[in-house]
Figure (cartoon, rainbow, N blue to C red):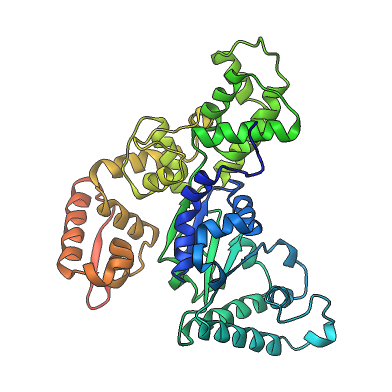
Length: 419
């Protein structure tokens, strides 16, 4: 009999979380990016709470790394320094039964935390803070931000980097604009490592189905299990809610297009799909619409959706239901037509740079900003004035032929502006 204690078999957890623990072991910061309610937080907390599982990721370095996971929800409407107090308790700087009179001066608490981190550094040890739901952190009092920045500043202390941050993002297209200003200057470290948490594959989905049925005392015919994967595409909320719907069905139900359509129109299923849709940016929604229409764009947005498992490597939508949902949407269809036209003529980095100009009409874009967009973290190695001039020249030529309403003007010693 299968033991369903683990949310996923260890081999699958290793495949998903090894990249994350690699940056923890190297004392770097980064972003762990997945869809909302994709269970990444639950899987990760399971790893932290089980010593044997955690040891399989950290090995002999286990005692050198302290990993703390923080969900910001408990800090809403609380004392602005409540997070700081909780961090102190988890680090055993404060006793769990602390009195408010002992902590009325948060500066003292913060100073003690900084000293703790410096001592960690001297012992060649390391603290990694995992922060989920950054949009919620953003809405907490600014004092929380000051505390985070003060902890981050200890990174600069010798002899070893004692502290790093990893954000669990619900955005599937992280960028400087989408991570709150609240976390500056932490942003500089976060953009170095983007790790993606894809939806479940077929084997993981089948295990999740059997585990859910076992824990809830439900039974489900084998034919429904295959259907659940094909319809959900491995998206966790769709999997669990579809099990509940299917478990109530008659075993003799014939699986055909009419049945799938009826199941698709279930209110719970539609709510899950809407929640997934709402989590996407306009560009990602349009990318899914392109895919539903059979257009393979090869854009950065398509690449991100493939990394998250919503699209196959060939650019097709994996989930039957998501494809149906997207096909029924008429979300800014005029923009979709414009994008199809733009992607027809502008290739790769030309299209990406063109979008930057369009989003910043009449605003000067510096060569450094262009270089950061084109080469990212490799900008110092790959920077080339000639390459920037060349791509601007190609865009201008194609704009003259196809987009006469736009013009890119050179601003001497400052950059370029689209008008």
